[in-house]
Image 1: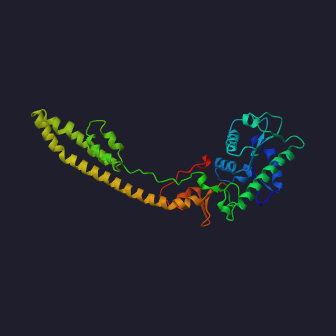
Image 2 (image 1 turned 180 degrees about the vertical axis):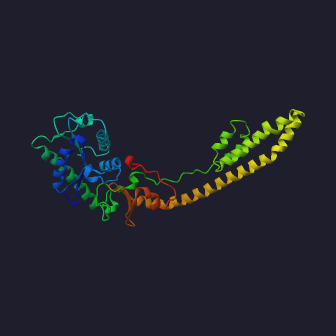
Length: 345
């Protein structure tokens, strides 16, 4: 059948109403020996995230059998989501590859236009199962040819497009991580601009002047805002306002200014110290992260991603780690943005 010892991974997409007949299909496929069928009630363990496991199984499947019936084609819900996801993944496959097999359980009409373009199998007919199995056999043999060609292309299998993964023992879906991102994500430079030193020129304006202070990168905003409000209160509503009734206006504002000078000094010295501390700390952190980034760039190019177990494999150290710990594997102190479902890291 195939030159490899792996099995064909088949996902059974179906509606809950069709569960009894789908269980029969699952058992028949399982008996074949060379097929590893995926059925939710068998594969998903108690406590696992149902939607997440379905998404992973759909992505990892070699073939998706979409079971259609009169009940499922008119039903709204999760089964339609599974079908849409399967059709989206099918767009990534080479033209002419058998990836989706529409299987009619009764005399129904598929509701998705993309499914109508595919030749379907009538399971309710006498030779329905054999016709479906023939499609699976062709897909399996094509995969075997591709795997054999990749292995023969290099003495070290991990250097080929696909490799025999020591995590899941599959050799057609574990791919170079550079497929998701050709270059490793550099750290984000979030060092504040020195233009923030000019902020005190604008914060003295009543009412809206406090807004830019609140948006500033300093850490202790509440302390700074309290000092600023105190300055504004003393200047505009405090000493100057009271003295205006007793002495000439210039004298009143002079006295008001002298009274607020200590508060202004405290505000400015605290603000510049806070801002300087933030800029210094973030500059040092960015410098460290850039060194980590440069050291990890070469390691990044050697890594592979295992679709089935959602982990990253390092063929040099022979170690693997969960995808969420990718930063740790690379020795990075910053988090990488990861979205494997959309093929992006």
